[in-house]
Length: 436
Ligand SMILES: NC(=O)c1ccc[n+]([C@@H]2O[C@H](COP(=O)([O-])OP(=O)(O)OC[C@H]3O[C@@H](n4cnc5c(N)ncnc54)[C@H](O)[C@@H]3O)[C@@H](O)[C@H]2O)c1
Image (tube, rainbow, N blue to C red; front, side):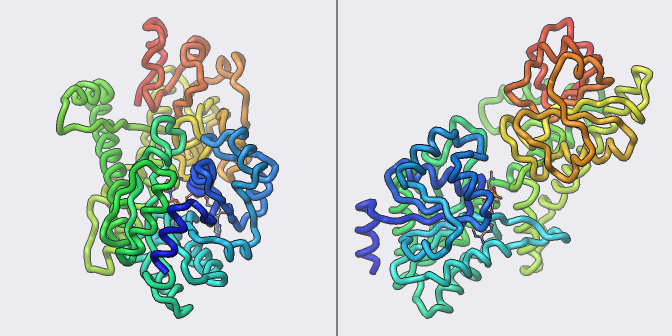
């Protein structure tokens, strides 16, 4: 079976099904389809599939033009009909892995995707889990399902974990030129998955097990979470000491070795960094182990939006204004530059706190429609001269490339800049700006 499947993959004559057409699944589908692989884009959301069929890309990195070519030619076939999984040689699972109410992993989407696959599972299929999760999930959920169907993993059906490293909005590193890690349940599973990804990804790095691959993804994200929390804590101290944390970081970054630059900001955001570390801390408890760095960095980062609000209140106070009834124009709602993803965005938390304090809030984000429940009753505005001039305070949360920072600074009364986005504006305007 292995020899047959590896030859089939090498010949590129395979059907690749992706479960979940979101931020991860859609770019993966496009990359594979553009390399000449036939892709089935399966999603439980009819709305998402309709968008794709109508050529409406909801992901900034995938322009309509790319989508159109692939969908028109049938290379990418979006569907909610799981019977098409029957045709698949390789199935990749790219479904959400959020946290539950008590910060525990919620792998219900993985489980339901696996149940769907199980209905159509047949000999020769390769199932790759790509959703970020705690070490052990591939064996405990995917392999278990395979074996419940009385297939032998590594003989009849092949199973691997391969973490998704896509960085939405990143123009330099894409799926195709970012090394793909692969850890199979057996050496044959690894070989098959690695051979498959090599069809459209430049470098594939094989590890000895799914657990190593699962843990490596968590290490990457925990590394970021801890370092972001570290610079954010230093930002709080520098603020109290009257030192510019931005200048400190630029100075430290001149060291050509042993230092890596992380920047402070309004708080952690996105679907990954604030979430994934807690998958590991939860799993660690089963081993009677406390992951102190994860808990600590979580605590530091959770408090940053409160610091931003305190900064707003103090800045207004210095100018004889009070936060209650002040008009605050928020620029940027997404968790990072040039994307429209507001999941766990600090902007939403900052808006909730400001609302409680009685501020009059207006928001602008060129990438976000603003249908989030936190934005109910909040005025979404175009960025006009009048709107900027009227605001008592402009609070820059996300440093989108589309903003004209010089123009904003010329028209605003006061600005709080949480990203050092105004660093290149005219010296004469810098007096209006407070950096966090
Ligand atoms: N967004 C990122 O930048 C990023 C980067 C690396 C890794 N990841 C990880 O990748 C995974 C997916 O994240 P995402 O950002 O693409 O999520 P997303 O919410 O953008 O997309 C997930 C899609 O899966 C669909 N879905 C849910 N249950 C399903 C099921 N049972 N069968 C088929 N489809 C189903 C949803 O309708 C949705 O369209 C998560 O584990 C995440 O942690 C995300």
